[in-house]
Amino acid sequence: MRAKKKDIFFQTLENMADTIVQAADYFAQQVSDFSDVKQFAKQMKEFESTCDSYTHTIIVELNKTFITPIERDDIMNLTTTLDDVIDGLEATTTRFVMYHLDQPDEYIAKFAEIMRISAYEIQKAIHLLSQKKLLAIREYTIRLNDLENQGDELLRLCITELFAKVTDPILLIKKKEIYERLETTTDACEHVANMLESIIMRNS
View 1 (cartoon, rainbow, N blue to C red):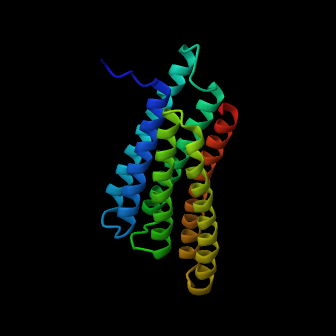
View 2 (view 1 turned 180 degrees about the horizontal axis):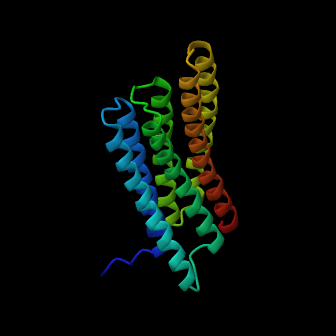
């Protein structure tokens, strides 16, 4: 007996979550040494383009599908918030090239690790959504909220250090923007968690 084909919306959301994991893994690996920033940015752009194509698939399918597995708005909002995560990572990588940042930085590496763990939590949650195991998702949304708090704490720490130790005002501006952009990307992961929470509430 053939396995039942997975719903196009759930399959595409899973593909997005899987791409976010690949991108966050790659990002964490690259910021540990910054060996080739241009190649790093090029690869991150490819991950971002892949997610854009998944977003396009979902919009096309929503326009032609009458009955969806969960509310249309929920599908669209979840797609947008997932896309924001990858956009945040890609935009940060672009800044590394623009600002000529090619030296390892312990705070960027710590943010990258928070992002990497968050990506895996998102992936697990989205795969559970596909299986309609809604209540089991809550464990991951709680963890994502906690990881976002860690991102807030890390931002406070690294901005404090920055103003205490960096005397070059240009470098200070560059680093401050990078740290803030990374913290905003951890916020985007929390927005995914919040979207999932509202889906759980409406469907369980």
